[in-house]
Amino acid sequence: TETEPVEEMVQTALEHYRYTVDDLSSLLNSLQARAQTADKSVVVVHSVQQNTDWFDNPVETTGLYAGVIIAKTSQELLVLTPEAAVEQADSIKVTFENGKDVNGHMKQKDTTSGMAIVSVSAGDISTSLLKDLEPVPLGNSYQVRQGDMIASIGSPAGVVHSLDYGFVSYVVRSNPMVDQHCRMLYSHILTDADRGTFLMNTDGELIGWAVSASDSSAAGSNMAEIFGISDYKGILELLSNGIPVPYLGIEGQEVTTEMEKNGMPSGIYMIAAAAESPAYNAGLQPGDILSGINDIKIEGMKNFQAQVEKLHVGDRITVTVQRNNGKDEYKEIEFEVTVGAR
Image (cartoon, rainbow, N blue to C red; front, side, top):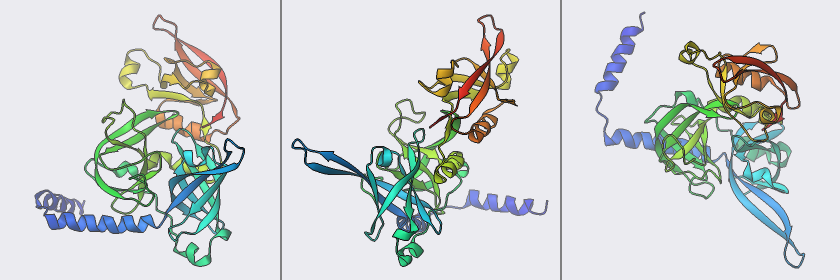
Protein backbone atom coordinates (compact mmCIF):
# COMPACT_ATOMS: atom_id res chain seq x y z
CA THR A 1 0.00 0.00 0.00
CA GLU A 2 0.97 3.68 -0.23
CA THR A 3 1.63 3.92 3.50
CA GLU A 4 4.15 1.09 3.67
CA PRO A 5 7.19 3.11 2.48
CA VAL A 6 6.36 5.85 5.02
CA GLU A 7 6.06 3.30 7.83
CA GLU A 8 9.37 1.77 6.81
CA MET A 9 11.02 5.18 6.82
CA VAL A 10 9.68 5.97 10.30
CA GLN A 11 10.79 2.56 11.62
CA THR A 12 14.27 3.02 10.17
CA ALA A 13 14.55 6.52 11.62
CA LEU A 14 13.54 5.28 15.08
CA GLU A 15 16.02 2.43 14.96
CA HIS A 16 18.92 4.74 14.11
CA TYR A 17 17.95 7.69 16.31
CA ARG A 18 20.42 8.28 19.16
CA TYR A 19 18.47 9.15 22.28
CA THR A 20 20.03 11.68 24.65
CA VAL A 21 19.65 12.64 28.29
CA ASP A 22 17.52 15.56 27.12
CA ASP A 23 15.11 13.10 25.48
CA LEU A 24 14.81 11.18 28.78
CA SER A 25 14.31 14.40 30.74
CA SER A 26 11.59 15.48 28.32
CA LEU A 27 9.84 12.12 28.67
CA LEU A 28 10.08 12.23 32.48
CA ASN A 29 8.75 15.78 32.60
CA SER A 30 5.80 14.76 30.42
CA LEU A 31 5.05 11.72 32.57
CA GLN A 32 5.41 13.79 35.75
CA ALA A 33 2.88 16.31 34.45
CA ARG A 34 0.38 13.57 33.62
CA ALA A 35 0.94 11.85 36.98
CA GLN A 36 0.34 15.11 38.84
CA THR A 37 -2.87 15.61 36.87
CA ALA A 38 -3.99 12.05 37.69
CA ASP A 39 -3.14 12.63 41.37
CA LYS A 40 -6.00 15.17 41.52
CA SER A 41 -8.31 12.19 40.95
CA VAL A 42 -6.74 10.22 43.81
CA VAL A 43 -8.75 10.18 47.04
CA VAL A 44 -8.27 8.86 50.56
CA VAL A 45 -10.75 6.13 51.45
CA HIS A 46 -11.30 5.86 55.21
CA SER A 47 -12.44 2.44 56.43
CA VAL A 48 -14.20 3.34 59.69
CA GLN A 49 -14.86 0.62 62.25
CA GLN A 50 -16.76 1.03 65.52
CA ASN A 51 -15.32 -0.95 68.45
CA THR A 52 -15.24 -0.79 72.24
CA ASP A 53 -12.29 -0.74 74.62
CA TRP A 54 -11.79 -2.79 77.80
CA PHE A 55 -14.23 -0.53 79.63
CA ASP A 56 -16.93 -0.74 76.93
CA ASN A 57 -16.22 2.80 75.78
CA PRO A 58 -16.86 3.34 72.06
CA VAL A 59 -13.65 3.50 70.01
CA GLU A 60 -13.50 4.45 66.35
CA THR A 61 -10.62 3.08 64.26
CA THR A 62 -9.82 4.15 60.73
CA GLY A 63 -7.79 2.47 58.01
CA LEU A 64 -6.55 4.71 55.22
CA TYR A 65 -6.45 3.51 51.61
CA ALA A 66 -5.90 5.12 48.23
CA GLY A 67 -8.67 5.24 45.68
CA VAL A 68 -8.88 6.64 42.16
CA ILE A 69 -11.91 8.13 40.43
CA ILE A 70 -12.69 6.08 37.31
CA ALA A 71 -16.16 7.38 36.41
CA LYS A 72 -18.37 10.43 36.94
CA THR A 73 -22.07 10.85 36.27
CA SER A 74 -24.60 13.49 37.27
CA GLN A 75 -25.55 11.27 40.22
CA GLU A 76 -22.27 9.88 41.53
CA LEU A 77 -18.51 9.48 41.44
CA LEU A 78 -17.14 5.94 41.27
CA VAL A 79 -13.88 5.23 43.08
CA LEU A 80 -11.72 2.14 42.54
CA THR A 81 -10.04 1.09 45.79
CA PRO A 82 -8.65 -2.06 47.50
CA GLU A 83 -11.27 -4.47 48.79
CA ALA A 84 -9.74 -4.15 52.28
CA ALA A 85 -11.07 -0.58 52.42
CA VAL A 86 -14.65 -1.84 52.45
CA GLU A 87 -14.35 -5.41 53.72
CA GLN A 88 -14.98 -4.76 57.44
CA ALA A 89 -15.96 -1.11 57.35
CA ASP A 90 -18.94 0.03 59.40
CA SER A 91 -18.88 3.24 57.40
CA ILE A 92 -16.77 4.77 54.63
CA LYS A 93 -15.42 8.30 54.31
CA VAL A 94 -13.80 9.69 51.18
CA THR A 95 -11.40 12.65 51.32
CA PHE A 96 -10.65 14.62 48.16
CA GLU A 97 -7.42 16.44 47.36
CA ASN A 98 -8.76 19.73 48.75
CA GLY A 99 -9.46 18.07 52.14
CA LYS A 100 -13.23 17.82 51.69
CA ASP A 101 -14.70 14.76 53.48
CA VAL A 102 -17.88 13.06 52.21
CA ASN A 103 -19.68 9.82 52.92
CA GLY A 104 -19.22 6.89 50.57
CA HIS A 105 -20.75 3.46 50.27
CA MET A 106 -19.60 0.21 48.75
CA LYS A 107 -21.12 -0.32 45.33
CA GLN A 108 -19.65 -3.81 44.84
CA LYS A 109 -16.45 -5.78 45.46
CA ASP A 110 -14.47 -8.57 43.82
CA THR A 111 -12.35 -10.80 46.05
CA THR A 112 -10.44 -12.36 43.12
CA SER A 113 -8.94 -9.07 41.94
CA GLY A 114 -8.94 -7.67 45.49
CA MET A 115 -10.67 -4.47 44.40
CA ALA A 116 -13.94 -2.69 45.11
CA ILE A 117 -15.98 0.23 43.82
CA VAL A 118 -17.02 2.96 46.27
CA SER A 119 -19.76 5.39 45.27
CA VAL A 120 -19.91 9.03 46.35
CA SER A 121 -23.14 10.95 45.78
CA ALA A 122 -22.69 13.97 43.51
CA GLY A 123 -25.15 15.81 45.73
CA ASP A 124 -22.63 15.70 48.60
CA ILE A 125 -19.98 17.52 46.55
CA SER A 126 -19.93 21.23 45.74
CA THR A 127 -20.54 22.20 42.13
CA SER A 128 -17.10 23.78 41.79
CA LEU A 129 -15.30 20.70 43.16
CA LEU A 130 -17.38 18.33 41.07
CA LYS A 131 -16.49 20.31 37.96
CA ASP A 132 -12.76 20.02 38.71
CA LEU A 133 -12.82 16.27 39.42
CA GLU A 134 -12.08 14.23 36.32
CA PRO A 135 -11.93 10.42 36.13
CA VAL A 136 -8.63 8.84 35.15
CA PRO A 137 -9.20 7.33 31.69
CA LEU A 138 -8.87 3.56 31.37
CA GLY A 139 -6.03 2.51 29.10
CA ASN A 140 -5.21 -0.60 27.09
CA SER A 141 -2.90 -2.93 29.00
CA TYR A 142 -2.65 -5.22 25.96
CA GLN A 143 -0.47 -2.55 24.34
CA VAL A 144 1.99 -2.36 27.27
CA ARG A 145 5.38 -3.75 26.33
CA GLN A 146 8.60 -4.62 28.12
CA GLY A 147 10.64 -1.44 28.62
CA ASP A 148 7.64 0.94 28.65
CA MET A 149 7.85 3.77 31.18
CA ILE A 150 5.07 3.84 33.77
CA ALA A 151 4.10 5.79 36.88
CA SER A 152 2.57 4.53 40.13
CA ILE A 153 0.00 6.76 41.82
CA GLY A 154 -2.22 6.34 44.85
CA SER A 155 -0.16 5.00 47.73
CA PRO A 156 3.05 3.47 46.30
CA ALA A 157 5.09 4.65 49.30
CA GLY A 158 2.40 3.63 51.80
CA VAL A 159 1.14 7.22 51.96
CA VAL A 160 -1.76 8.42 49.83
CA HIS A 161 -0.71 10.92 47.13
CA SER A 162 2.79 9.46 46.89
CA LEU A 163 4.30 8.83 43.46
CA ASP A 164 6.99 6.81 41.69
CA TYR A 165 8.28 6.11 38.17
CA GLY A 166 9.71 3.01 36.60
CA PHE A 167 9.78 0.67 33.62
CA VAL A 168 7.95 -2.51 32.76
CA SER A 169 10.50 -5.28 33.25
CA TYR A 170 8.50 -8.31 32.20
CA VAL A 171 5.08 -9.19 30.76
CA VAL A 172 3.19 -12.46 31.26
CA ARG A 173 0.56 -12.48 28.54
CA SER A 174 -1.65 -15.27 29.87
CA ASN A 175 -1.50 -15.90 33.60
CA PRO A 176 -4.06 -18.46 34.92
CA MET A 177 -6.49 -16.93 37.39
CA VAL A 178 -9.80 -18.14 38.79
CA ASP A 179 -12.36 -18.24 35.94
CA GLN A 180 -10.06 -16.33 33.59
CA HIS A 181 -6.59 -15.64 32.25
CA CYS A 182 -5.00 -12.27 32.91
CA ARG A 183 -2.07 -10.32 31.50
CA MET A 184 0.39 -9.53 34.30
CA LEU A 185 3.02 -6.78 34.28
CA TYR A 186 6.15 -6.82 36.43
CA SER A 187 8.30 -3.87 37.44
CA HIS A 188 10.76 -2.67 40.07
CA ILE A 189 8.56 0.40 40.51
CA LEU A 190 7.53 1.26 44.08
CA THR A 191 4.08 -0.08 45.04
CA ASP A 192 2.00 -0.79 48.13
CA ALA A 193 -0.67 -3.25 47.03
CA ASP A 194 -2.36 -3.36 50.44
CA ARG A 195 -2.94 0.41 50.60
CA GLY A 196 -3.73 0.80 46.91
CA THR A 197 -1.37 1.56 44.04
CA PHE A 198 -2.51 2.28 40.49
CA LEU A 199 -0.31 2.22 37.41
CA MET A 200 -0.56 4.59 34.47
CA ASN A 201 1.14 4.89 31.10
CA THR A 202 2.79 7.93 29.52
CA ASP A 203 -0.60 9.02 28.12
CA GLY A 204 -1.97 9.37 31.66
CA GLU A 205 -4.23 6.33 31.32
CA LEU A 206 -4.86 3.71 34.00
CA ILE A 207 -3.34 0.39 32.88
CA GLY A 208 -3.60 -1.67 36.06
CA TRP A 209 -3.15 -1.93 39.81
CA ALA A 210 -0.61 -3.57 42.07
CA VAL A 211 -1.34 -6.84 43.82
CA SER A 212 0.66 -8.65 46.47
CA ALA A 213 3.37 -10.56 44.60
CA SER A 214 3.31 -14.32 45.13
CA ASP A 215 6.43 -16.33 45.88
CA SER A 216 5.79 -18.33 42.72
CA SER A 217 5.66 -15.22 40.55
CA ALA A 218 7.09 -15.76 37.08
CA ALA A 219 9.33 -12.72 37.46
CA GLY A 220 10.32 -13.15 41.09
CA SER A 221 8.74 -12.04 44.36
CA ASN A 222 10.99 -8.97 44.63
CA MET A 223 9.12 -7.21 41.84
CA ALA A 224 5.81 -5.36 41.79
CA GLU A 225 3.07 -7.52 40.30
CA ILE A 226 0.42 -5.63 38.34
CA PHE A 227 -2.96 -6.78 37.04
CA GLY A 228 -3.47 -5.49 33.50
CA ILE A 229 -6.74 -3.56 33.38
CA SER A 230 -7.95 -4.70 29.95
CA ASP A 231 -8.85 -8.18 31.23
CA TYR A 232 -10.94 -6.58 33.98
CA LYS A 233 -12.93 -3.95 32.09
CA GLY A 234 -15.98 -6.20 31.91
CA ILE A 235 -15.69 -6.92 35.63
CA LEU A 236 -15.25 -3.22 36.44
CA GLU A 237 -18.44 -2.50 34.50
CA LEU A 238 -20.35 -5.03 36.60
CA LEU A 239 -18.91 -3.63 39.85
CA SER A 240 -19.69 -0.06 38.78
CA ASN A 241 -23.32 -1.06 38.24
CA GLY A 242 -23.49 -2.76 41.63
CA ILE A 243 -23.70 -6.24 40.08
CA PRO A 244 -21.75 -9.08 41.73
CA VAL A 245 -19.26 -10.87 39.49
CA PRO A 246 -20.34 -14.44 38.59
CA TYR A 247 -18.09 -17.14 40.02
CA LEU A 248 -17.50 -20.80 39.20
CA GLY A 249 -14.08 -21.22 40.84
CA ILE A 250 -12.21 -22.90 37.99
CA GLU A 251 -8.52 -22.40 37.33
CA GLY A 252 -7.51 -23.90 34.01
CA GLN A 253 -5.72 -23.68 30.73
CA GLU A 254 -6.78 -24.07 27.15
CA VAL A 255 -6.31 -27.50 25.60
CA THR A 256 -3.77 -26.91 22.83
CA THR A 257 -3.74 -28.45 19.37
CA GLU A 258 -0.77 -30.56 20.40
CA MET A 259 -2.67 -31.86 23.44
CA GLU A 260 -5.63 -32.72 21.21
CA LYS A 261 -3.31 -34.68 18.89
CA ASN A 262 -2.37 -36.77 21.93
CA GLY A 263 -6.00 -37.70 22.50
CA MET A 264 -7.22 -34.99 24.88
CA PRO A 265 -10.69 -33.54 24.16
CA SER A 266 -11.00 -29.83 23.32
CA GLY A 267 -11.99 -27.44 26.08
CA ILE A 268 -10.46 -26.12 29.30
CA TYR A 269 -8.12 -28.41 31.24
CA MET A 270 -8.89 -27.90 34.93
CA ILE A 271 -5.78 -27.25 37.00
CA ALA A 272 -7.80 -26.74 40.18
CA ALA A 273 -11.23 -26.04 41.57
CA ALA A 274 -11.06 -23.38 44.29
CA ALA A 275 -11.95 -24.75 47.73
CA GLU A 276 -15.66 -24.39 48.56
CA SER A 277 -16.31 -22.79 45.15
CA PRO A 278 -19.45 -23.67 43.15
CA ALA A 279 -17.39 -25.93 40.85
CA TYR A 280 -15.74 -27.67 43.83
CA ASN A 281 -19.03 -28.20 45.65
CA ALA A 282 -20.66 -29.59 42.47
CA GLY A 283 -17.95 -32.25 42.13
CA LEU A 284 -15.66 -30.97 39.37
CA GLN A 285 -12.07 -32.13 39.79
CA PRO A 286 -8.56 -31.22 38.62
CA GLY A 287 -7.88 -33.06 35.37
CA ASP A 288 -11.44 -32.67 34.07
CA ILE A 289 -11.82 -31.10 30.65
CA LEU A 290 -14.58 -28.50 30.77
CA SER A 291 -16.23 -28.77 27.35
CA GLY A 292 -19.61 -27.05 27.74
CA ILE A 293 -21.71 -24.57 29.71
CA ASN A 294 -25.42 -25.15 29.21
CA ASP A 295 -25.75 -25.70 25.45
CA ILE A 296 -22.60 -23.74 24.54
CA LYS A 297 -19.49 -25.66 23.52
CA ILE A 298 -16.32 -24.44 25.25
CA GLU A 299 -13.21 -24.61 23.09
CA GLY A 300 -10.89 -21.92 24.45
CA MET A 301 -10.26 -19.45 27.31
CA LYS A 302 -11.81 -16.44 25.55
CA ASN A 303 -14.92 -18.49 24.80
CA PHE A 304 -15.02 -19.70 28.41
CA GLN A 305 -14.56 -16.23 29.92
CA ALA A 306 -17.23 -14.77 27.64
CA GLN A 307 -19.76 -17.39 28.77
CA VAL A 308 -18.93 -16.92 32.47
CA GLU A 309 -19.40 -13.14 32.17
CA LYS A 310 -22.92 -13.72 30.77
CA LEU A 311 -23.96 -15.70 33.85
CA HIS A 312 -25.77 -14.27 36.88
CA VAL A 313 -25.25 -15.05 40.53
CA GLY A 314 -27.74 -17.72 41.58
CA ASP A 315 -28.17 -19.21 38.10
CA ARG A 316 -28.44 -23.00 37.94
CA ILE A 317 -26.34 -24.11 34.99
CA THR A 318 -25.22 -27.37 33.42
CA VAL A 319 -21.45 -27.79 33.14
CA THR A 320 -20.24 -30.58 30.88
CA VAL A 321 -16.82 -32.14 31.46
CA GLN A 322 -14.82 -34.93 29.89
CA ARG A 323 -13.27 -37.07 32.65
CA ASN A 324 -10.37 -39.48 32.11
CA ASN A 325 -11.25 -42.99 33.26
CA GLY A 326 -7.59 -43.88 33.77
CA LYS A 327 -7.30 -45.77 30.48
CA ASP A 328 -6.73 -42.72 28.27
CA GLU A 329 -10.45 -42.70 27.58
CA TYR A 330 -12.79 -39.86 28.45
CA LYS A 331 -16.34 -40.07 29.70
CA GLU A 332 -18.77 -37.16 29.39
CA ILE A 333 -20.33 -36.09 32.69
CA GLU A 334 -22.82 -33.29 33.37
CA PHE A 335 -22.88 -31.35 36.65
CA GLU A 336 -25.53 -28.97 37.96
CA VAL A 337 -23.72 -25.88 39.29
CA THR A 338 -25.17 -22.88 41.13
CA VAL A 339 -23.27 -19.75 40.10
CA GLY A 340 -21.72 -17.92 43.05
CA ALA A 341 -20.29 -14.42 43.54
CA ARG A 342 -16.60 -13.51 43.64
